[in-house]
Image 1 (cartoon, helix red, strand yellow):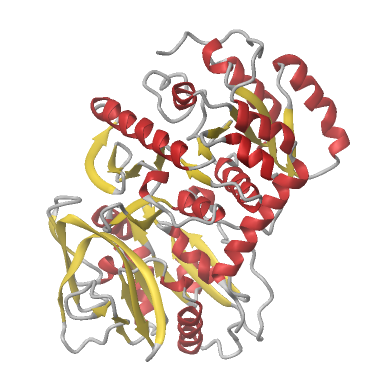
Image 2: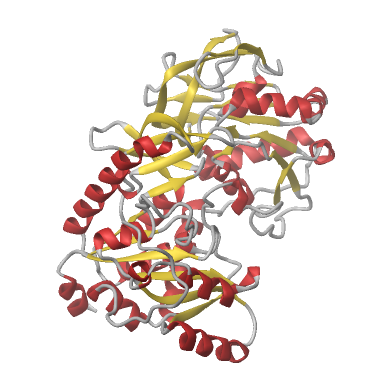
Amino acid sequence: MQDRRERTGGGGGLLVAGTTSDAGKSVLTAGICRWLHRQGVRVAPFKAQNMSNNSAVVLGADGRGGEIGRAQAMQAAACGLEPQVRFNPVLLKPGSDRSSQVVLLGEAVDTVTATNYRAVRSRLADTVHATLAELRAEYDVVICEGAGSPTEINLRAGDFVNLGLARHANLPAIVVGDIDRGGVFAAMFGTVALLSAEDQAHIGGFVINKFRGDLGLLRPGLDMLRQVTGRPTLGVLPWQPDIWLDGEDSLAYGRTLGRPTTPRGRDTLRVAAIRLPRISNATDLEALAAEPGVRVQLTVDPADVAAADLVIVPGTKSTVDDLAWLRATGLADAVTAHAAAGRPLLGICGGFQMLGRAIHDEVESRQGSVPGLGLLPVEVTFAARKTVTRSAGRAYGMVPVRGYEIHHGYVSHVDPSTPPLITDTNNSTSDGTEGVRVGSICGTHWHGAFESDEFRRRYLDEVARQAGRHGFTVAPDTSFAGLREHGLDLLADLVEQHLDTDALWRLIESGPPAGLPFIPPGAPAAH
């Protein structure tokens, strides 16, 4: 493949679009990136605009922390690259059903609604186009991921994420559809047929995702799809349950995270995580779910809280509002009863803030002082400037812990006798400590801490003891980083084994194919 890598000459590219959200764009993009990386191609990922409360902290050009979607951080790993803010120049973080925080090149710059978004759209588009041009000049290939569906005809004017991006940068596009949802042929055909002739000219083929069954039974449909669209299906990716990578948001998760595996000891550890309305970085839970014998459920049922060994109140983009929801649903009472029984409870970021005595917020909710659940002796005050940083420390003596922080709220008061959860070693806190622990109740602002294998094991050992699960045994050999790498390699294997990689290469190298037919009725041309 060396000759192909040289022939790209830099600037090769592809847009991976989808029939719907969660059709498989993120994982297919990651798989193509890893496939190219394994062949020595200098490849980078790109998503012009993401909407997700699952974000990762990366280092910006100025050395300060910045935010991008976690899917783009995962795709960077597939490329063998450190993630950077340019891989996801625009990140929208929903704070309510009507407003989102705008993160531009890693930094929060505005809050927009559907109405005033149009006022900033041209500025965002200019940044996106300039950033993609930079990346294409630096890398052999850039694999771009679309957002939602490219056939959101009500939003086509001003689009710079899907076919608007493809037309601006002259990118070919492929459309992936999830056959597990049903109706995949109608979705594929409809996606093309509702595009303008100018947009249709960029759609070079289809990929079907999550197929299980006899491919021979599917083939007549693939042939007919080519007849009616003039475009081939580049491959059919089989259902692969061992692929387990970061979701864009909590909707990507079912009730149970991961695939619970056989415990190493006699007992299973049951973890109930509250599915908050504006839950953020639910990916914190995945490292726990990767452990054999740990069953992690996202729930809104107080009965699940009552039955759990460990309860987690995760992060949220709207701490005060989600705290009110917690009280209105009866979940606050269930969490308090769980703690009163001496059973393990953990709050992460916004969840940590809820467990304290009071929240003083004139920034996010602007509701002033609000009582917390009173389970930890801390008070939290919201600052106008968001803390976005990578963190490192030690816990349980000398066990290393790494994580990252994304929050407006900071601990403004803590009872001085309260022991910390972590000793901070990179000076991200004024007193060198992070989080607190009071008996079986812990809280921390650090996301990603459980990806540190030894810290995770020590914490689960402690939880099992506190919960009376004396037959639970932590696996000594689970490597969360290793599991992620294995998942990326599995994706690349699927691309290599089940896609027409020669056709994929032609699209990447040569751009949109000439002579693609127009499929009526189409849509008016977008400018």
